[in-house]
Amino acid sequence: DTEVTQTPKHLVMGMTNKKSLKCEQHMGHRAMYWYKQKAKKPPELMFVYSYEKLSINESVPSRFSPECPNSSLLNLHLHALQPEDSALYLCASSPPPSGGGDTQYFGPGTRLTVL
Amino acid sequence: DAKTTQPPSMDCAEGRAANLPCNHSTISGNEYVYWYRQIHSQGPQYIIHGLKNNETNEMASLIITEDRKSSTLILPHATLRDTAVYYCTFFSGTYKYIFGTGTRLKVLA
Image (tube, rainbow over all chains, first blue to last red; front, side, top):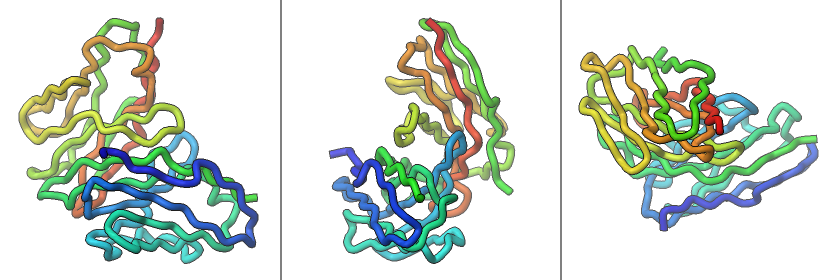
């Protein structure tokens, strides 16, 4: 199984809502990532988990809260978002980088719209 | 800051080779160059990577200059399905890919 799955595919939420994005992989990868991508822009790294521990937080606002319950699952909890948070949210996984980097496998993304 | 530089857009005739350049002059000696592509609103898809030597797989070839400051991705026989945004990236520190702005490749029938 060489797939990263993400649910839901689309999400519309109000600024007072609480919602969660889910990402799953069964490739035995021990690093998992959240990226945010605005239209016509490259993906921007938000969070990295390595061996279920948060390794990188790219100064993301606290209204985004990541969680890694186990090595196969990654969640992104959303609360009190702003309309400018509307974007494609991508999950990726990889083996832990060996020296100069490692291949990341991306999911299809969740298209989030904040009203 | 570490970064990559790519032309914003390119056209290629179907069946011809597409050559996509990338400048990565700040890459370190042990950092691999990776190429991904993203077809409209899907997740990025891995294409190929390399360190010093040229590489080839079933999707593409990668030519890296001897000084490692630039590389070229070659799609030998472009098809309409190769229309996508192509990103040249490399790791800057542990876990952090540096994505440039990418090249929007349009393959023309």
